[in-house]
Image 1: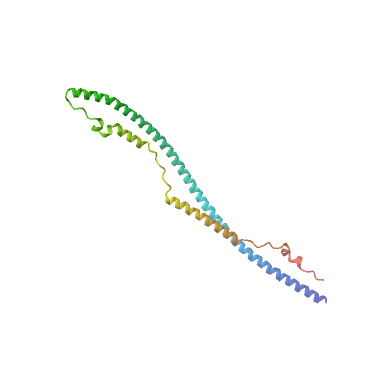
Image 2: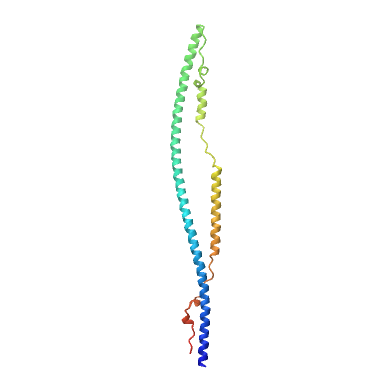
Length: 202
């Protein structure tokens, strides 16, 4: 009887070892799958960070470019304002000279008529640019404000493509998270050592 009991005890231990070994193999297979997914995700994360670094570098380059453009705009606005002031001063001088010229011409024309001579031609008859109206028209052109150009269609299309790429990446990230969803944790009792589970034979 003692021998039969010992044999039964050993058979039960062998069966327990077999079951636990199968369980260990299953866990090992799952661990390999998880490690492969982990390595793949780490690779993707590295690529994402590299791409982010490139985008940030490009952003800073555009920021610097915009800063320089704004600085040039400020300089040009100051230059335009100074030029407009100079033109206004010249226009005032021109108007004053016209005012001085007009009565002198009328007086000369009156003297010429007493002598039977023809009157002198007006300034606009001699040359259009000497007319005060010409300068007034030019002033209206100077005072026109430049219009900011509309955003080119190519830039708008690029912005839309960038937004679509961001949405696509978010979808890929959700799919990866679903694929790597872990199964429920094993009970602590399944990780007991075989020595503790082997029955002691009397």
